[in-house]
Length: 151
Image (tube, rainbow, N blue to C red; front, side):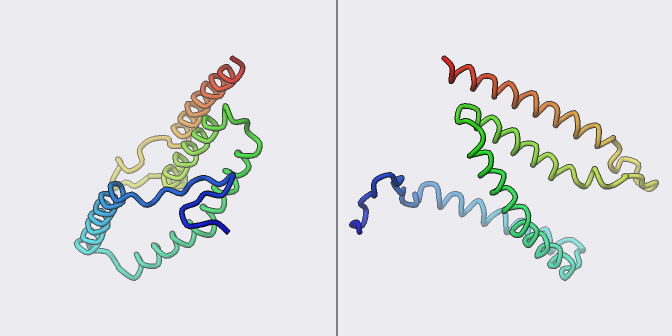
């Protein structure tokens, strides 16, 4: 047993919660939540339907998305060597975010005669181009990491 504040060998030191970062982040978060609630109440939104959607999104995040991200992170942490791990993680994070935001465009045809500007582009091609760009940038990062580790 160790005294309070003493570090165990091999364990990282815990940093206390810093008020200089906590309070500004708290205020910004509270303002954003307030703005979201105000916007929700000002618009003609069925609150019950929104509540169901919101709870479903939370459940989907906690049951599917978060465990998947944790699993991928653990696999990358074990299989990818240290010098290139950051580039691989960045590529996977950017690819995941792109796909997450592209889902509505990928699974909606966008053909609405009342609003021709609604999803006017070919989103499959756009997403593939962006995924290719992310892959190229990731490959450059991996190459640089490998060169540094050999030097």
